[in-house]
Image (cartoon, rainbow, N blue to C red; front, side, top):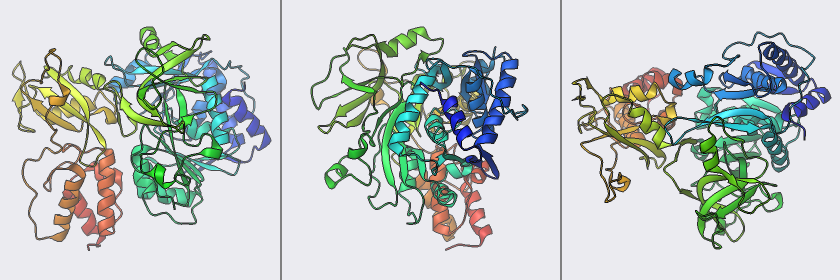
Length: 579
């Protein structure tokens, strides 16, 4: 079996001057990308990198990150994917005891000669973090075999050719980059990088895709629904948008100028199911009939050579049409959780069908329809998915309990005002029930909800920081003495307790109306969007709504520097376009 970097090297020999990557004004040909990766790989070897040596990559989505990914493969190491935006508390344990860390400009001179280090298919290619129920993240180790299988299956299902232009939208620490990069770079196609501000705004992302001539795009569900719900020009080059999700709520319109297909996977099992399987009987926005559209889109059938069994808790097949837990087998399974033998044994089990193989216990509940496609029906545990990121509430709870004023806490996922799942924290004794009011800890210290949020933000990635905070005198318990999550009160989505400011000015009134729709809570001119329960996704929707109503262009990044209604009003007036 060819590993991914040898497949890429073959393409670089066949078409060295073809475009491999475009990022803003930067364009790399296959020859240039290969030479840069060769030079860095040789530097890594001199720095002590050997087979499966972990090499943390602390880089934004960029040409440098792609060069580093390819170089680590060529050197035989294991790329540990990190997000530069993560707090230092989360990054520090990963960076300790590593001979090499790539976190800045790549100074190695390009080389036309590769290091020639052989890689076995079962050798680790990369590692990615996933939220851990024990209170700390787990590191999932993924093999070259898994990536090679994904390249083969996705190249065929996506019908990739050298003429294709793929978008690269995933965060730098996400395993989704595997499907956005390697099937295309191993097929002679080109990859195009969207900057963070563009990739966070549905309308700007649409415009960028159209202008860049993107033909294939992989988008996580929270962004996909507003993206394919926009009006699209008929002349767009886009032909296929695949949506990565456990569950998509709304069918895309059948008259879109491109096809939309749902897929499902995880860091531990890579690609599991797709609505493109098999190609002759795919279930997409273009092929679904009226009967199919009366239900939510399914997550599809298993990829070739991937087993997807629906089992009971004691590993027996469920009756036809019944809901059970999804167990996955096949070449795309990860090796396990690195350094976590006990947790690996809990989730990666001997195949109950025998044969000496393994299955991964996903924790996802599914039902197999009569047509063989799977529907997603939630989780068997407390894990939630926040804006495409899997979050174990126990990990967030463990961090909050480190604050000296938090005696008890519960974190859970609750649908927000817009229907999207949001993370909510219920804390005992850090604050009084009046939102934002200061309280005293056991040692007499005073602080506010904002301090708790800042405490969490300094230790957790942004999707894991709760957006709603509720102070309780005590947690509700059931008869067994455990926390009764069903008895938790509905969260308060905004901290402002006053009503919306009255104004005869139509712009002020309009902005406050859109603010209330975004947060599900009334606000005032000086309210801070994030501190009032918002997050980056709802902020994106707010600036889009304001921009559409008043005909102005508002950059999400600029709004988040001072996310208040007053900022939006000033931007509208500065543009001189009120209506």
